[in-house]
Structures are given as C-alpha cells and as structure tokens.
Length: 215
Image 1 (cartoon, rainbow, N blue to C red):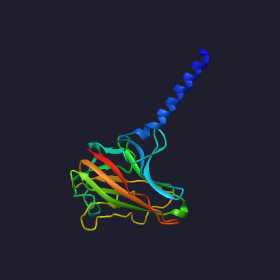
Image 2: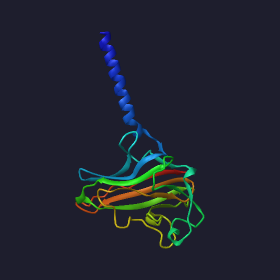
Image 3: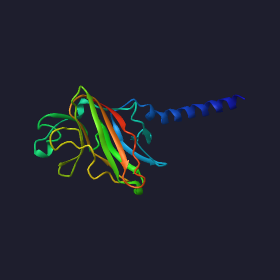
Image 4: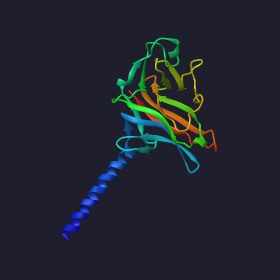
C-alpha cells in the first residue's frame, strides 16, 4: 500500500512539474529577452488569428492580451545620418530598438506565416493604430540589407512620405523573418495590428493589441 501511495505521489509531482513548465509562457506577464515571433499569423479551420509565438522554454502561442513586451534602456541607438533614415527620426536622436540581429539581452522579434497555407496567402498586414503614454510616441518596423540600408515595412511617423499603415507587397505564406522594431521614446505603447489572407477565403483576423513597455 505504501509503495502504491509513493508511486502515485511521484507521478503527481512529475505531472505538476510538466504542467508548470508548459504553463510558464502562457502565464508570462512581461517578456524582455528571447526569440519571439510577435506577429504570428495562424490559419485554422477557416479562421485567421494573430498571436505571439515563443520558442523557449517551450514552443507555444501566447495571447498578446496580458503579455507585455519590454525594451530596456540598453536598447537605445542613435539614428544615423542620411536621407534613408529620415523616417526613423532626426539624425543623432535616440530611438529604442529590438534589433533584427539576435542580441541575447533583448527580445529578438519577428513575424511568422508558416501556418498559413500557400492557397490562403499572401497575408496583408495592417498597422491599425499606435498609442503611447506619454503621447506622441512613434513606432517603426524596418529591415536592413547587407549594406545596412533600411526598408520600412510599417511606420506611424507622420512626416511626409513616412507613414506606412499596410505592409508593402504583403507577407508571403510560409515566411519566418526578423526586423528592427523601433520606438521613438520611453513609455508605454499599444500597437494594434490586423491580418487578412489575400488568397482563398480572404478571411481577416480580429484587430489585436500588443502592449510594449520601452525604457
């Protein structure tokens, strides 16, 4: 009898440990390091959804609701000179960036449409809105090529020629890539996104809000 009780106790403990490990990402309130696909687009049973894909400690999907992405003050960079950078900010000014290249001290943020069938793609990605506290904070998502030249994908900057509310050329189905996620000032941001399948059913996701803490 004692042997049975001990066996059951060990099984229960192991189960609790597994459950605890699996639940860790879902319970995470703030994430400030690691590989994340912030714009994770999934197509399941005729519906398109947006969530956050994590890779460690487990491969999981998180709801952006209740999950805050954080960029510390160490993410600050100086805006380079040159007209190619005008839509990021004034040359010499400071912005806070989750970088395209992996940095173990910061989030490595990307986008992922690997769970969107080819027949449903490409995906139209919209930046529906950006709000910040204090007011006036700007957000830009851009990539850089081998020469360091930026290409802006989404941008809330209101300077003439800078705003981009719809991802140019859409995002192909089966894509997994990373870029630079830039914020103009410390504060609390809410980024609102919406995705639409351009092929097949043409289904649209709900608008999803992503909280971001900068600084």
